[in-house]
Image (cartoon, rainbow, N blue to C red; front, side):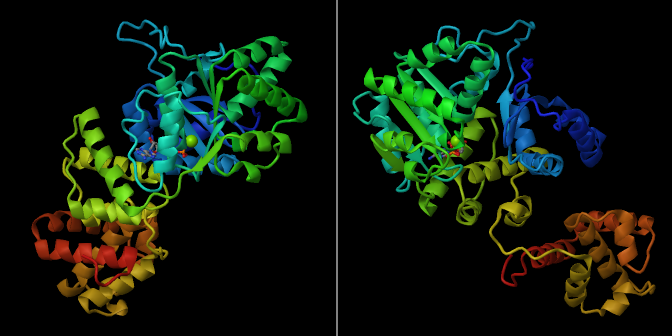
Length: 462
Ligand code: ADP
Ligand code: MG
């Protein structure tokens, strides 16, 4: 499904260069097993759309590599702030194309690469967890989907990752049972508009939108098109409302705060019901975590069990959005898949380090050396000396080991910070500690304690 239209193609965006960099940074093995499978689809103003063949691959990549991949892309293209995945499982075991939604009433402007916006069967009212912060939006959405509301348009707003798309999707899922639903992002709407003008298909474009019973537009804040487009949008909008079609919109802010959108459009948006979703409260976060954990266990037949202590740790630390919460849980699930066990609280802190709100202090080798010396009650001079007494060797090896696992420094770089020791000494130290740790509880506890100290600088943590 390649986009042959050159409309949005950015000459500066080169997926091959990114792939090379991915291979370079992640190494051949990870690249060949996972990252190579990512197919670049399209670049938008501030995000790119890629596809992979299964949900599992997507989750795996998202939970383990996404931050780093985004970092690489951002270095080359600063405007990209997110990566969207679609699942391209269009081929069955015999290699035949599967006709998706062939008898569904959802209309997607006849353009195959629109399909990523297809209504997601997995985001319904049934699995939307309700709490104080989202109850109003949920109930209103439900009413809209039962077609008993006179909320037209219906407008939901909130910060990112709070469940807007989930609710919009739930409404679409419900209404498509008996109505013609069009579900599109504002960016896509603009893209279609421009494309239709260029290919002289404006009539088709208009028909497409004006013939729908339910028009759902996600992320309307990204609609910042030229006058002509806004004009068209305004008329489409009015004609839909006039003939009693339901219009549903989402944005990251209330209508009045939208920028680059005509005043008269904003005022039309405010004309129906406007609801917001607030930041999820602690109870809701915990409830979502538990629900998602059950879902994971059913969906992937996982047997991941997390203690109440861990669940409440995650839900109390990850407060920003539901998306982050779900992302955190996916990471934990990947960890348990690899190591075949549920992580301990300590391990959770390491896996989720970048998501936790704990004040991060930059981890330096110097800092590691200081804390390890303090713990073993030796001086830094002793640690860095060439003396090989046992009471110095072990702490030195521990410090080297921690430098390796907690910083991104290379082996030679670590060696240099330990009085120019050779990189083979670094490897030897890391291997020795890894081995000793397994059957020496005292050492293993000490290392965990030190890890905590280094990562969080909190004396009282386990
Ligand atoms: P938004 O559109 O506001 O950025 P999304 O709807 O994409 O947020 O939500 C982000 C993720 O969190 C999705 O995976 C969604 O299914 C999930 N999610 C958000 N709110 C809830 C909720 N109340 N219950 C269950 N899942 C939720
Ligand atoms: Mg969204």
